[in-house]
Image 1: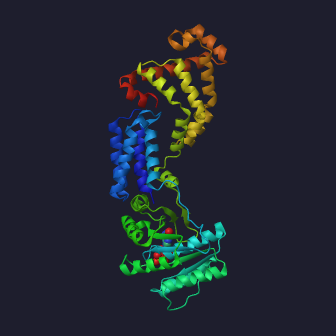
Image 2: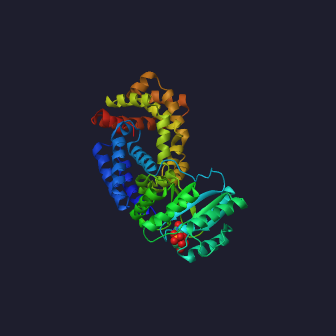
Image 3: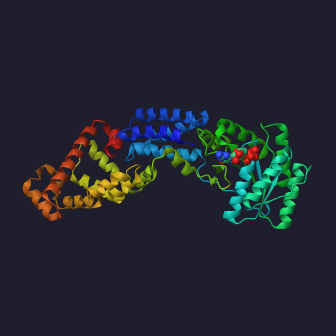
Length: 444
Ligand code: GDP
């Protein structure tokens, strides 16, 4: 469902993470593209506007300036904001009331309401060992009652016997009474749908609501209808006391906008997703997993979180000040190596980045692993304080001493010094970006 959006955002972020330093202009440019991508995915304009504004505030504020990896930090901010837009925590069904607990299903005709009723009943039966009774209140289409009965037979769920000519409110009352007498835990009430929201439909829904006092009113909406689904939800919310949304046809190739703006516009949590015609094609809605699916960023998010945990701000600031002077000695390098090890070493870091499985194998083959970090630290430890501050004095005899002291070779020492030199040169270049630039680029 989110392939296109995911692809678009992926391109934006790839460009972003390729740059070391990020200025306000870079963030703005990226956010313009994010905005277009969301609008193309049919996310409602007010939702897009507020989303982009929130990301911008955080991205050009202190968070990115002080971050270790600016590009990834922006991805993390987008991710967090996306999770918030989708409702933050995942919301389950509330079934805590005294049984039988009534769950009322509402929605337009063809949205997948009857199918979802049976799916939920099956899920509650299989996973939560609930005894569920289903009743169709759709008296306008006799076939609807029949359809629920057949689904019940397929799934092994009890349905209320059909009495021709009975009115919706009476069927609902009869269902509750039967459930009480027969010890059912949950009663699923599948109300009638219409092609459009109209007064008669709303009056009927309100009457059933008043007669049954449902613990949950689940609006079933078709994700493929995009913003229309959101409009329908708004209308039902104001009249039917909707407590949660079931978005169906998430398996289709819609643009995903309904799923993304539903919560922000209606304030109602999305609780379940329909992902196919089969009765087990129902998933709980987890905002964080959806965000992950959309951003397709492997585990960049947890990488940034881990980095934020392990890199103490003071150390980072001290380093930044040194970089500002254009100075980067071997003490600083040793500190960076320690940070890398804290974050799980090269392998740990690589494992969290998307698409590096292959590279990881090559690295393993080349024997590049955590031991290198340890050895590099050992070499620095074998140096005198003066050597660490002024690596240029390390001539051949000193190199031999350091190699012997750290159990490495002169070539290893040369490699380390070369690596340090490259980094020091980069720091000098970075210096001209000023302190802010240093905070962004120097540590990336
Ligand atoms: P109702 O009129 O709202 O009760 O809609 P139905 O439950 O009868 O569903 C209408 C059609 O949509 C049926 O053919 C269902 O199999 C199909 N359907 C329902 N939910 C989903 C879903 O999540 N994915 C797909 N692909 N089809 C669904």
